[in-house]
Length: 206
Ligand SMILES: [Zn+2]
Image (cartoon, rainbow, N blue to C red; front, side, top):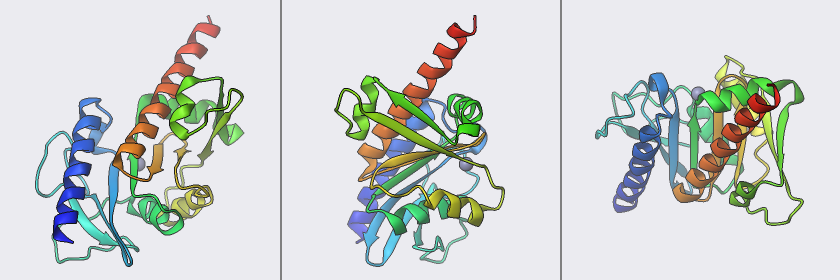
């Protein structure tokens, strides 16, 4: 268990470093989680309020299915840990990532009234396992409820598959996948698609 936990820690810390290099943790925002065990569910989650550009032994802590620390610690789990709890209670995913970027916020505002944004005819939707030429990737956009349990409840309505993505309006995105590699791949694909759409809209509006 300890060896596995260390392995998962390193996996998550490496992802954190990569996302930090992309500047995807503005103002200490964002939080990451990776599952360590299934029965009972335990996962490592970002400790609250850390500078995610630095790599330290206090970046993550182990929590249970309810998001409570498993061991005695002075660290506090991220305020948004309940979103990760929802992922691990409703799907078989092994990793979930949540980041705030300008592109995902702009897209969530532009398409928020539709409750979703669709992508079709885009190479990058293959990251979601969609290979058909007419495949449609639909990413839900939910309201940004300040009450985290309410937000987590709304978010969990969209956890029907073992990999996916949900946008929270003017807040950020949460993606989940079977492991860190898959979750990061989905996050990168989403951010590519969002940046593409923002750029295209700018050109069309000229
Ligand atoms: Zn957030």
